[in-house]
Length: 293
Image 1: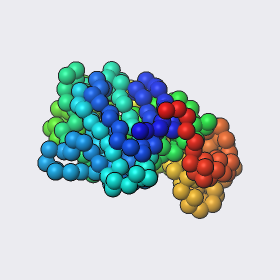
Image 2: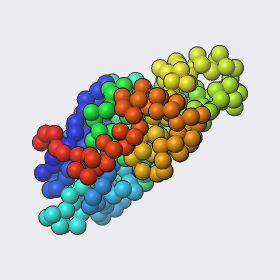
Image 3: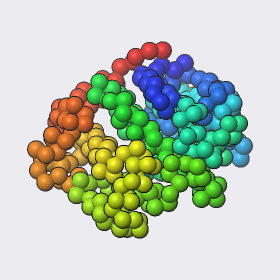
Image 4: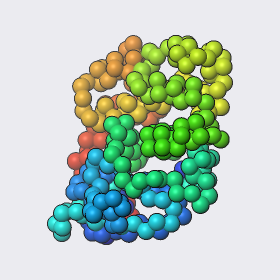
């Protein structure tokens, strides 16, 4: 049995935060699926990857399910009291195909492996999605869309493009221009309001005006608006981790004054950073509650 703690629908498809206590079947479905363990006991995979007699999903792995595949999960240690919190992303076919047409063409099996080691970036994104799902009273639909797209871009870049011949993988994608992909990597490496966009443009070999045009064409955002969204992600992750005072978070993100950071955060999230951190502590202490079965 699984309990749906939170469920969200968007252009990307459906995102679920589940509590898994007993074996649960997840297929077959027509859309590709991505799973990440948030916390709790490891989950046994059934069927296991072909190269393994048995395998589990822990915090160190991601699991991918291709369209049409049957799949099930169960607590791995056999403890009837064991439970796990699971993030499940069910991707809308048209949405993911528009972004990565070479991999997600109709009838394709986009994921070459059932289980992959998770990268630090994707571990952070999965935890952030789970955190934002719990604090859903502050979660705007556009921020969720951005985080899911950010997650899928990282998955495509990390696990799919390198096995598909690089440039061939990106053919027809909004991210086909390698200069924009390099710029995205620079912005993600250390989101800070102090980042100079003229320097970013120069580092990827573009004039400022051409950089802004291509970036908007690829992502739907200006470079500065995209960076703002990354700064919000980073701020939420830091506030949730309880690392340091608000002033330190503000400084790390390149704000000249804490008051500027507070206004920025309140504009994007709808609540002051200190109040958001307090709300997260209450939610984490209560387990977040359950929304529907």
